[in-house]
Length: 181
Image (cartoon, rainbow, N blue to C red; front, side, top):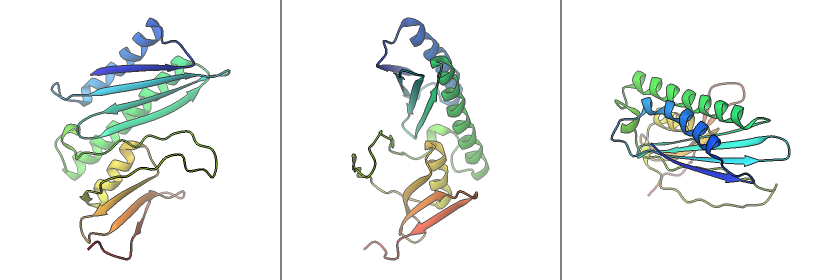
């Protein structure tokens, strides 16, 4: 795994770098030896507390988490725990559905990074290519990213669809009425 550790409002010392790399080393078990995996950690310091954003880029799928805590090292621990949970959940789902033999064989997913934004102002526009997939695959990718919704092209009826997490549990799907030409 290759590491990229960035500090915002904080100098990344050797002890911070070593702690992050050591803890991210626990993630190696989820990837093949030949996988080209890049891990980016962004550490931010505030007057009170710190925030850690970790994104793991693989050929197959990207994983992302963001944690705020009063203690920087505790935030790193919590972020790693969240990432491991995402990966275990994805691996279990893939084992159940027999969709792919490993994490590295899942389909490509573009990384969706969130940015801090002011209310009622569009600060980012994103264009994505919608690959045809089943609703199960869309739910799997949404869970892997830790997002509450995911836009995809339904392989069954070729309609643009959005799968989302419902507040009362379960998932919902919004589908476009018109089909692609």
